[in-house]
Length: 447
Image (cartoon, rainbow, N blue to C red; front, side, top):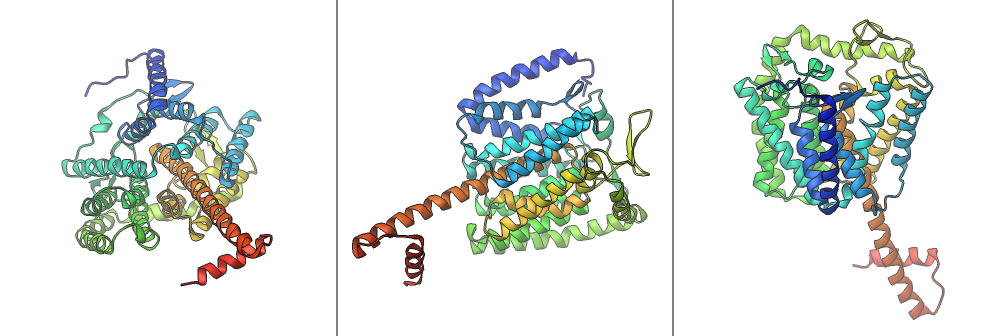
């Protein structure tokens, strides 16, 4: 495929801007078109397809901005606790930038790279929830099929889309494990692809696809995750399926649960020998990778309250390192090293809040997706499209929790009004909270 490196950056930026304006108008009229385009570009356009204007600007950012501009008015968004956490985290990064504690690139990565997809997800209730889940499911099934084709054909077509920027130089190379290429799709990294595939599982589970198609889709997604040869992707898929079976079991039939479990069991029997052979052949490389992630904990004492770690350094080529580590494969540790202990602590509080919300009964696909990937954040950083998809799903989870809470309050208010009306008519007495609760208990106990 011909290189596109000779394209003028300003001309391309103007083109992206014009497309953004046009898309804003389209999204305002048809929000579903905006979200479908956003997900397709997220999954099928490599992260290095961008122009540099001090910072990298991608088509995905333009589409995300168009969605926020088009749908914000009339959204009726009310701040929830995790909204406040996100605002404070991003605000602390902005303060760090203004004080000179972090550079423009790091500040841009958090403010735009996290904040924009979070807002896109937060506005996700502007479209039908079942439709959006099905859209996520279909797009990621396509990603999974392309990943399987990539493994079989030993060719990644996306890396042939060449752009002369640091992202292409850093993410276009194919990585190997045990002598076999790890599938990466358009994500630039097998770990990022595996993590995103795992996060897609709950959306496939609740999608509108027919039960048989849905079961096959989950198997295809799980197979693609195995072919990334990423332990994070494999384990997160398993955790996602377990959470779906236990928490979203009522949304599917018993036959579907049995059929899915059977297909996955067959898939494990077939895939396990391949995965074991690969990790066995990788030998010291795979073991060293796990040991390296454990060694990252030695950097925790170098973190500051706000801003970059005291162990941060940058060589003449612009490559950043922390102590003796040139890469940090842990989202939590990298956040602490780059932005400080305060943003890290707030994100950990948010992670705990997500688990608590799930336990308390807020069981939407987005929240389950986030909880399923939380353990993986100890071993995968916010890289390429995984960053965008994670924060998009986080915003969607908050939106779904907020919508469910409002629906419960409306239902509770209607029930209270009905009970109070019946009580005052029959007893000719006032209806306080104690009376309402007593009557609700009596109503619940009545067969």
